[in-house]
Image (cartoon, rainbow, N blue to C red; front, side):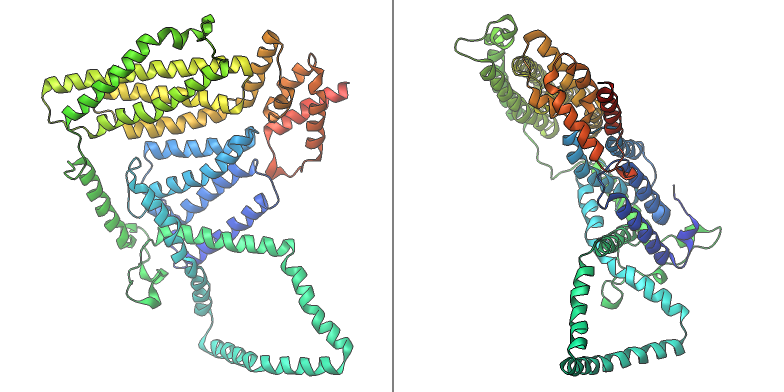
Length: 537
């Protein structure tokens, strides 16, 4: 699947790509310069993909199901800046989104096609992001100069050269004349020496920063996209032509696009085929773990876990019955649960992955059955300990309240339990691709937690805890984002202590910028609810 738009067939492709980068950079500074992210994020994501596919669509390898899934993940994360106001995901997503976009674009257009679940894709992402982008920054300037030179005849170029030569000669003369006249006339000196101060004011003005913003992002957008159009140099030994030019590739003729296909495409497809062959075939250099050693390690570990689970079963689950060990507080009980969680995450999961992925299959049938039984025991014990940690954290929240960190730890434990179950299935169904499953579930889980309404949930659970225990931390409750404001307004009628905080939120929203690029649904909904609440009073 290739997108062969008219601009791709143009002999001035580089110039059109540069003009597109200029327009995209202008839009970028308009959306983000001195504006908080909001609806601008999903808008720019769509515009960026339109620019990439519009000018490099002929490099598209195809749309695999995972590529479609990954775009859905990217777009849904971008929509969180429109729909929600959570401060944690506000920061995380602004860091994660560029990485995912680079990952996705490289999968779609990358020079050396890589399978999406292999670590080799990281090298290709970085190659396109840094060296190939930097290599084509000079191409942005040569595309302009080459377009200009094609439109100017030799006589005009001769005149231009003479003008430049005359300016070079006159520059020192003008400096000498200005110095002499400044010495002769004080008013002239004040005017001349006032120019640098005026230039300083312009240099650091908003207009200058906007111009530099547009210039830098223009070069980046052009270099990045042109790195997919011309990823390698065909004349690496010639420093004069180290970067690609339009003439290096034949322009496809109407009705015969295959003739215009650059040489790198066939090379990339060949390399990608070799990669796939090597990945599907046996790897003689891969580190393998002897099955007897693996079974011995599993036996020793499982003995410890079985003793632990059997002897500590009442201790693990007795807290809800009021059976805390003597001298142990709720906090101590919960912290020990977190230590067990770390043990499950770092030790059990690591052992499980190591045995599943690196154990040699040359053992006897009986040994393989024993190893599978030991792996099942490890998975079951790990899930029991995970449940223990989960219940302890729930107990801690009941005693001390719900926070962002505790919510995220709960979510991480649920994800880890799902990964454990997948690993347990992999023990029997050996064809299950763990890497693929973990990547997909990881992305899906991250999107789900973005859309789970964390602030609203935390507010509701803390209010529910207040109704049971009459305990509340109003300072933390008021620090929740605008997502929780409708719930807090309802609660303020029975807990007036938070009304001042709601009033402060209302005043802050009134003073907030109203520019449409920063529009956020959660803030708008909170502002309307607060406005109705305080005007009603």
